[in-house]
Length: 118
Image 1: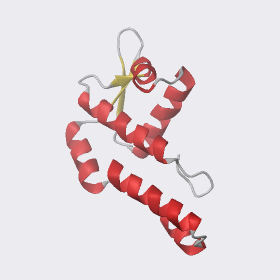
Image 2 (image 1 turned 180 degrees about the vertical axis):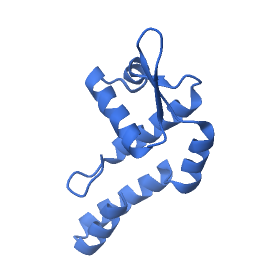
Image 3 (image 1 turned 180 degrees about the horizontal axis):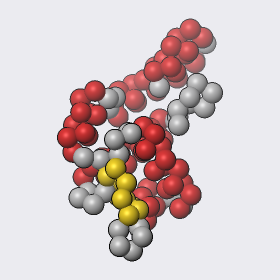
Image 4 (image 1 turned 120 degrees about the horizontal axis):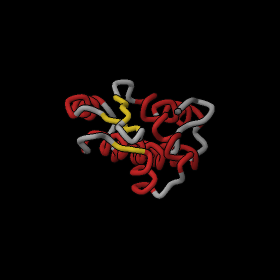
């Protein structure tokens, strides 16, 4: 999760957006095994990613198949809404660059304001 005490890194935010895209694009949703393979992460990290997905996108649907595998799915109309209202990768990158620039210039007020958006 992203709080003032522990801000989400740009890479984690980008991965979360990519995971949301996968959960939307795949008919059945995305499983832990698929997340492990797609992101080259271990099982525990994949579990943390799905927790972040559920927290960030509360309309995310989970289901369990006949083999007891869990899948996470975001309906495409929900994803379109998310993209129309949310922040895109390029905007996150620009925000991250602005924060770094403010840090270099030691501009505490700007760092706080920009970090609050992240």
